[in-house]
Image (cartoon, rainbow, N blue to C red; front, top):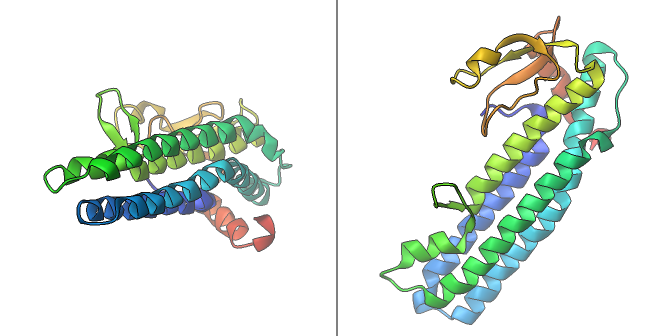
Length: 228
């Protein structure tokens, strides 16, 4: 998925979760020969820090909305809308991240206590598991957070667009090439908001403006510290 400049704050959040996953995996790898109590304490400290990040994720979503609105203001001259319009998306991300971290905390406790050389790979997977998918597979924390931040981040960008333009206004949707996205390419009402599936590449740009100009406006606002 191509990240838009205004989504950078959520991209940074996903990177922190990916690094936390790597650290917990390393701690589990040391468990068979190490001090399990100390290793568990360190792993939980890592995950507790991620729980704090999860609680701040709602704020990050409102930042993405505000930056998106400001970029559209620069691009079109339309008045900005209140970032509180993204509150449902913000709370959804926070709730899902908190739940993912809680699942990983339970897994880490069991994995570090039971890790052996012959089950190490399974133990590492358990220690960073965030959610079971429909196929019964345990999704790792880093991948789960990357999917959530990308999907909700793009929803937030699109919501700012439809709020400012009005849902009946025209946008140009571009970027998707899968069977889900292809029928939605081209001119569409602003109420048709990307993404259409996890890791969707689609973007919605106001009709009459190029995607390059839209991205440039995003780059301008993200470079302004006052917008953070």
